[in-house]
Amino acid sequence: MVIAAFKYIIIAMGMRIGLFVDMYLPHISGVTNHVRLIKRSFETAGHDVFLITFGSTHHPDDESNVVRNLGVPWGSTGWNYGPAFNKQTRDLIPTLDIIHTHHPHQSGSYLLHHVKKNNKPLVFTNHSRYDLYADTYAKAVPYTSRHKLNARYLSYFTSKCNLVIAPSEGIVDWLAEYAQYEGAVVIPNGIDLTAFRSDDLDPHKRSVCRSRLGVAQDDVLLCYVGRVSHEKNISYLLSEFARLAAGDAALGDRLKLMLVGDGTEMAYAQGFAQRHGLDGRIITVGAVDYELIPDYMAMSDAFITGSVSEVHPLVVIEALAAGLPVIAVHSPGISDTVEHGKSGFLAASPESKALMYEAAKIVHDADVRERLSRGARERSKNYCIDNTAGQLLGLYRSFTT
Image 1 (spheres, rainbow, N blue to C red):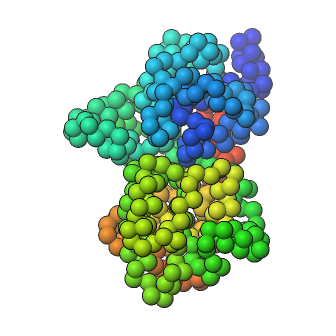
Image 2: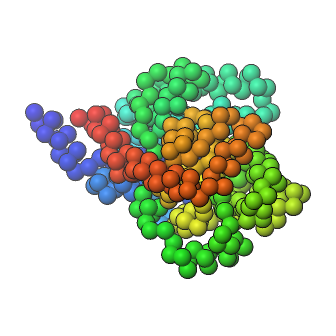
Image 3: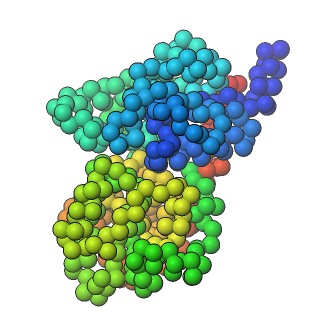
């Protein structure tokens, strides 16, 4: 009786939640933004939330309860290798009610020992297609070996978790096939809709912003926001844009592509523009503060990506919330988010001219853009961060009652 009452008091006062990630700010990614948003939402709901990560221990954080374990950066990928948790993290873990990791290989593997030792529930959200990431970052390992090892580890790790979250139905299916894990629970990633669903830029500000980038008011501006890296299929996106631009006599130079973000293929993107005579039409903005992303989207006419490695891309949800029709490739995550013909157009596969064909439908028809824009805003309502975070808190409570 006393124990039950004590548990009720703890729940009423709020839970102590640990969110573990291998990479965090200053690295910007969909996972970074997602974890930052759910941390704020949990805190607003009255919970004590700690974010544990790897990297420089001297980074000036603008939020409370960020614990940084020393890690060595792996090039410009944003990932940091840390050999172990530090004492602060080891002392924190026994005090947590919920331990939720967003990366399985480093944070996740280190946590297996600690959750068993301290009898703590372990939650894992599968944010990435780790088969595709292995093909990008583990090429030195023979194909069969790297996938066998990767799948075997992911199968083992998920079997040790108390709860596995999949941001989309497509990833539930992928986990079942690749890692032989059945039973993942779908909770979509959420965003702060208010930042993106505010009124569009006023005409004067929109004009000024576009002019600074060399974009006229009657230009059709496609935007890509995210890492400019191999796993995002940047070369395919650029090739499809070049084909579309070359064959578009109606629009001519008024069709432009804006890349917002940075990464390992930025130099390739800039070189591609020069080689194909697309300087000024392929605009490389580079990395920008997350708070500025809504402005870049608001000055655009549609969102485009060639990536097939997404799980449940926040940036696509953000584009929908901003009223941007989405042009993408049918793949797990994206096809769960974008309704073909209602909020965007999806190419059947990342083949030559496939993405270009879908983009042309939006580029050439302002009425289609307007119709899809309304559908995009409506679709985004499903992904309010407070709703999705609330679903997650409900599952957390099942481990504390």
